Length: 127
Length: 126
Image 1 (cartoon, rainbow over the protein chains, first blue to last red):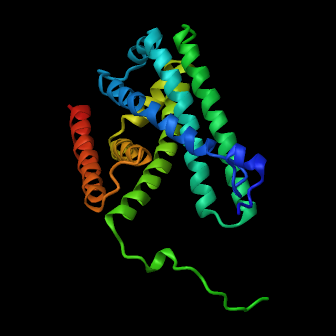
Image 2 (image 1 turned 90 degrees about the vertical axis):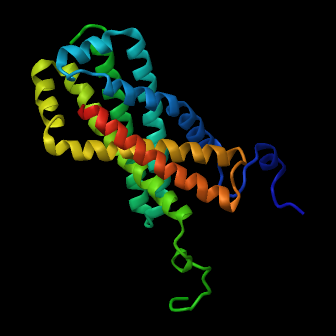
Image 3 (image 1 turned 45 degrees about the vertical axis):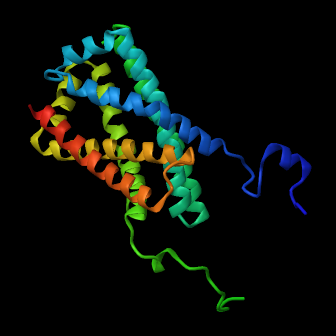
């Protein structure tokens, strides 16, 4: 005998109240980050001096800007999901857990907006 | 109900320390470290967008001798998390769960991360 309601059976949901979205999003972003992370690491290695003009010229290249924006968006999401999992596992008190997860969410949105704005500004020639 | 001695399930503390759980913990630690490293990268990008003077100050900090240690640390975290992440993805496909396989892939991850970090550090300095 199953105690799962017909609706939950169809939705594939158990007592956790939510399905595999978190797990799946973490995996999808991981798959995308394997090549993008390597690309970023190699790009950092290829700079001569990392001087202002050199980095600006690098970001003005549309391919760089596009790849970097994708990397930023995906890495911020992956980081948010990972930090959330760690907080939920190790922070015991409910209040502290809520504060930590919400702070992490706000922090990650801030990082995302700041980085995207910075890349676009430089790429469009504003710096 | 206070003070009632309830039976508890075996806690993590009674299990022997293995390469598998060690690498799992390191995966989480490197993940958290990389989240902090993300902050450093975003600061770098915002400094770049703020103009040459601001960028010069951040560049001076990031290229300081003492800063090479944390940078090398983040490099290790990146390669470790990447290699072990791929190991996790194979598990998600249902592959590599045998006892011998799980230890071999674990050591492969450690060796890959150490060698890649060494090579990257050498190339970056050179």
